[in-house]
Each structure stands twice: as C-alpha cells, then as structure tokens.
Image (cartoon, rainbow, N blue to C red; front, side, top):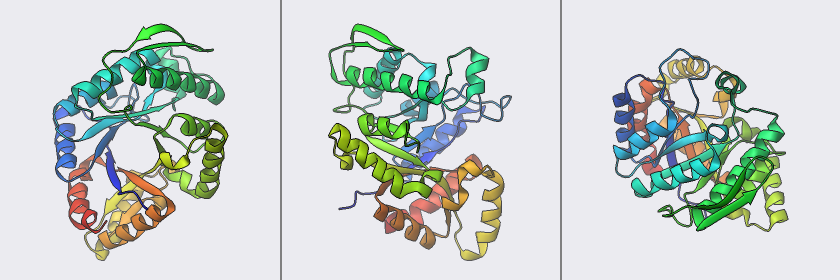
Length: 310
C-alpha cells in the first residue's frame, strides 16, 4: 500500500525582511503544505553579501507564527552546534511548537564557510563519522533520561535531557544525500526519512538496493524509512505557458546540481502524472524548491489544481 503523499516547500531565507518569510509560511500552511524548510548556512552560498537570516532562529520564529505547519532546515549543519546543545535545542523547540519541529541534519556541504568561521571541516569520511557520533548522541537524548557516549569526536558523560520531545518516540530525523559509502549507512541506522536530492534519482535502483542491504546488515526493516524527493517545482496553468516557464526556471536554477530535468515542471495534469510515477517508485514525500517571488502563486495553483487529484 502506498503511503499518502506529503508535500513540503523549501524556501532559502535569503531576505532582509522576516515578514516576507512569515507570509510564505502562512500561505504554505493555508494551502495544505505540511512542511517548510530553510537552509542552514552562515551566509547565503554564492551570495555572501546578500542579506540572509540564520536558520534556527528563523525556524523558531516561523513556528511561533503558525499553528500547524512543521518547520526545519534541510539540513542543519552538524559542525555548527555541539550535539548535546543541538539535542537540547531540538527537544525544546519541539515542545514549545506543539510537536512541529522538522529535524534534518547533515555533515556540512560548504568548506569555505567553515574556513572563514574557523570551524572544523575535514574529509568526507571524517565529517560522516562526526555526524554519525552526533546522531547517536542526539537519538539517545531524545529517548533516554541520561546519555553517555565516548567516540573519536565527542565525549558525553551522564548528560540529562528533561523533559522529552513531544513527538514520540522522537522528532522524525531527515537525512539527505545519495552517497552509498557514507550517507546510506547513516540513513539505514538513524533516519526516519531519507531525503533524496534530484540527482539521486539517476541511481535510484542501485541506491535503494544499497539501503536495503545496509538495513539487512543491521536488522532494520527498510519500509520504516520514508523516501522523500527534493526537486524544483514550477506550474503553468496552461500548456501555452510552458516555454516561458521552462526558460525562467532554467535561468533561476541553472546550476546542474538542481537537476531541473528531474524536477516537477509542467501543467497540473503533467505534474499529477509525474508525481504518481514517483509514488509508484516508493517516494511518498516531496520537498519542492521554489523561487521566493513565485512561491505564493505556485503554492496556490498546486494546492488548487494538483493536490486534490493526488
């Protein structure tokens, strides 16, 4: 049986005016989107001098300004916060938001911001090892009264975490990426949701097999891990608007990493077909990247013309 699809919006907080983000969050909530995601960087990647708001503070404010929307960062950078502090922050925000924290965490993606801030970076293997230790600490804190852990990067002795998060058994943990060597083992062990970036669909069959093999190795049922896909969304009310829409999206998301060709760009009928195809692959959660200027209109159109058919 296919899980009911969930839809989220990824809107990087590259703004100087918080009110703009709050309006978009309330639009997402009103139109039936379940989550709103931010980025977690010290400044906007590629736009270091452009105004940008810090992720955790912004997520806290957005949760205070909404009533049902789940909010988080896709993903939090593990290197910015000690895992004990992050565990306490996540627990607290889940409690005060009424169980609406969306908790995504990763190993870090931009070396330059770490260098500028004097933060540790290291190889992919080292960062993944550091993230694995952090996840072990945080997951223990979410469910246990006291946590002790001794690893290569972190040492924690009898740290309490009370009260517990509101979501049980814990706030769902989102881990993103498509690396079979480092990411997939962490997904198998710790993730409740595996967020697959657009480019990951090219190797979907192999990655799924790798995840299932890793789950078998640690005796976990892979069906307990929900699959999420993050990709560009753009909707044209009618077919005659598609050429202009595709040109605009191509300019806005020109970097190859966005993988526009694997995204969701088309008329409502086209999107219903494509989303249905992805659901049959086993993807049940979708995170749509939208330019901030088009976000409100896109959410309205998607909610009116696409959601009811799914």
